[in-house]
Image (cartoon, rainbow, N blue to C red; front, side, top):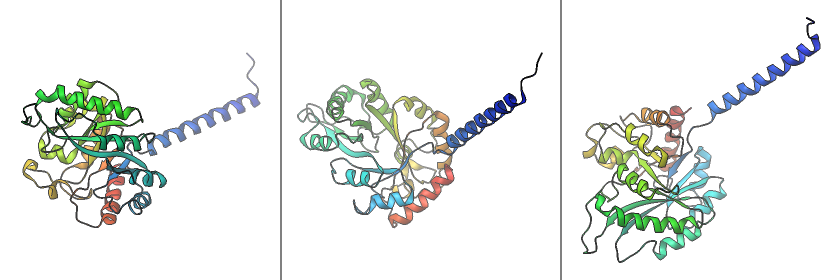
Length: 295
């Protein structure tokens, strides 16, 4: 058997080496890429359109979580090369006031083509007799689903989607409330949010969030985090449940690792409600803490 020419062997080896180098570079690139886009909410990224977008860009944030009905900040965020991830809106539903109302329609019209998300928190749900449904009461689901469906139908015309936002003390108080409603609607443009501070306030630090995260994963659009203390968190005030990311005794790095274990790769937002310190300092320290968690 005649051996292949040395030139052919040399070319083959060079080709194999080049392939291996490309593969190694691709693997390194994947490893280096952050698994989540990290953004800051407007309650800590303060200062308005002339200040907040530039500050977030300087510090390395991917974007901004703002307010529904604000038409000024989204273009300012986009002009800074960042993403306006969502607009937070608190709504209450009653049979006499079908959604979406004119105010929400105007904002959704203004968001057309931006590919953003309505972050929907549902505060009160009123019965036909004027009484309110209790918090988390599934008896309201049919009516609420109809209201959310109408909002999502209108939002879809401009490319805006909906992510339900569980909030302490609201009818939509629990992640499982949001998931139950989203599954009832069963549409890709209505998802759910996991808010760590509200989870700790409603469920407590002893409850394992992993099963809920896994159940929500197919519809999980956002997760928000912050520094927090552990312990009897249902009794804590927001000063202990919402801190800069480099403070608090709750194992936030472990929680972020859990997100990876359950398969969540979507955006993560920094919740800064009620933090009194100067925003630049808080945002800078929080970004440093985030980079230590997710190198």
